[in-house]
Length: 260
Image 1 (tube, rainbow, N blue to C red):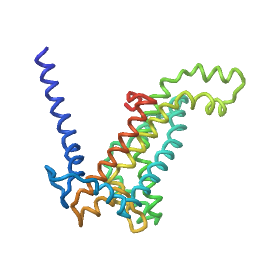
Image 2 (tube, rainbow, N blue to C red):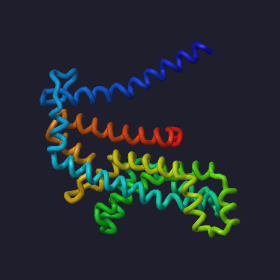
Image 3 (cartoon, rainbow, N blue to C red):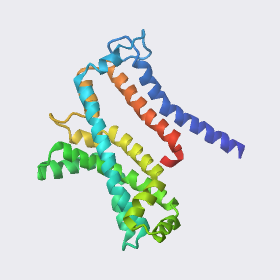
Image 4 (tube, rainbow, N blue to C red):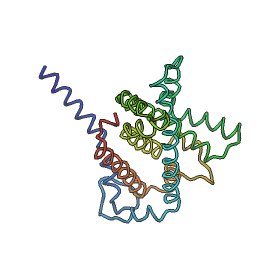
């Protein structure tokens, strides 16, 4: 038994090292003074972080990515909350079908979703790129929202809701004053995870990119076509810090177990 535990520990350490090592290399190369990404670095400078905010595409892309991520996470919650409530409180025929429909986007490769949305919404229906992109990101966020809210709703004691009905609250008032406050941790966890997923998405964003719509992932790829300096490493570190900050907020107010 001890040998199996040691073997599992070694495998776990190797996997963890393979995950962390590339990130550490990116962080280190972001401080290199050479005009091309190199490892090990020669010299130390913070100029590449300053250069990130001197690139209009990066600044505009970051703003647009924030806007889309916030909107996509919010819309996914507005769809997911009533959907989960209905699936967990009412006897719906073929309930498993609806659950599979909501979770299907997580099972389909994102590049397939992006191509299908581009062909359908942009080419066939002529919808604006921003609206099509928002639809794609909502589909991407919805499975995470459904899973987390379902877990929160299953932990909710329905007797509290029934007690509210008995004291005179109608179902709508009970939903907003009793149900929502009791699952607020799951709602916040779903929003944070959806925001991270949308903000860092590349496959769907690539298909919905255009002259009038500049997202951060596509800005980074476009920059790499003509430049290979540590600015890309610097902007990657900034993305890591944003993601880490959100995870720290989730840990402080929710506990990371709420995200799983």
